[in-house]
Image (tube, rainbow, N blue to C red; front, side, top):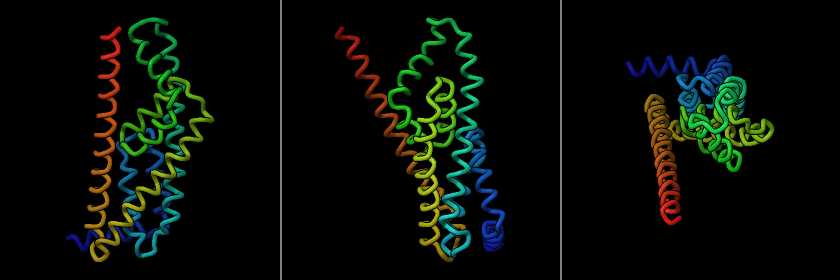
Length: 210
């Protein structure tokens, strides 16, 4: 059964159409996070050990697709979300979170964009929010280039590592690559959560001392 699945995967991933599939998956994943874009890039990286698909082409196509998808997400926020904010009273409680997000992302939106690109689901929320708070498009595009290229390299190389570790068993290589990506994502999220908690505690202490 596993051999048949491996043969099926090999036939699919070594097909010339795999690059179009990778582009589409990475683009859709940017604004529709149900699509497993990262998993497909990792899978392609596993099979790239054999030389087909080409590892550099996998990285380039995945990065380009992710760049397009992120901009679709940004524009959805810019057009739909912005109009929603403008309908809210200037000093209402409902508008306060968006005002906070606008200030925070204005100061370090680029860094947030790059970090959140590695966290499925959260990257979509980040790009939509950046559009909603009218983060400058040129700055968004510049930081997004860094985000999608590093993400594509990271995903493809994790798959490539799994392919080398289990060269005779690509199914295990795919499982290893996806598992490693999940562990790294969990660690990034844990660090981000602790940092956010520390900032909240610092803010609470400052309020108490005032």
